[in-house]
Image (cartoon, rainbow, N blue to C red; front, top):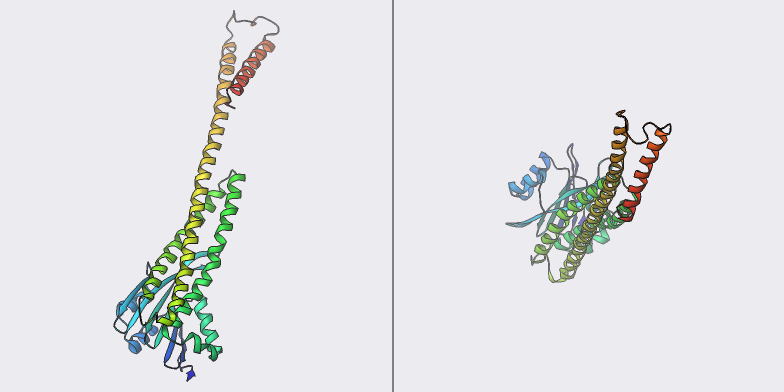
Length: 316
């Protein structure tokens, strides 16, 4: 019989709700606290180390096999904070023969939406909650699909950065490049280990039953596409970074050539003005009433001559 258990708790720390279809139950917990951990320990007897992972930061996705259940940690990208920035959210999963327990901090909305859909439409539970493995697949696929828009926007950001790099001379492209590289590193840290966890899930016979082989193959293909796509964008960004470095060097060289040319032109002019500023008798034109104009003319001839020389040498 399809029914909701009488377990729906909004505690000060989080939310606990359970949905059932036949013998299979899906327990969803958001923002777990001490009360939620005690509930899981008393009802399911989960290992203390697994319960500790629910309230501590897990650095990498993983899968642990325990007597009677499998414990998984998966990471998925989300946009959070003000301003909106890419960050990683953890999903903790306990998978048994007749139950699925999902625990997260409230940032992952796809599992919540799926839970609400199945809660509102009992007819869909017959398909999505046929087995624990089928339900787990649906949860993971919803999260993969929600990750795609966050990855798809990256090429557009790279194209915009490329336009800035070839058009601007300020430091804005450097800041944008650093932010993009940070986001790509975060995505790599989440997506690649998730793919390894899904590979391990496919080897569990009671999770990946023969009728679910195609589903898990699809999940692996989708997350592999995300991983490959991120690698492609990373390659694009690295090539763009190299191009930016070359352009920056060229701009620096042009500025240095210009400053060097100016210094070189000013040096003989400074020498001429210094000599004539010493008021020494016997200098050419020093006694002429046109001395000032003659000196300026001499300096102009020297400056023009050096400019012509630099242009012929293609130094300017």
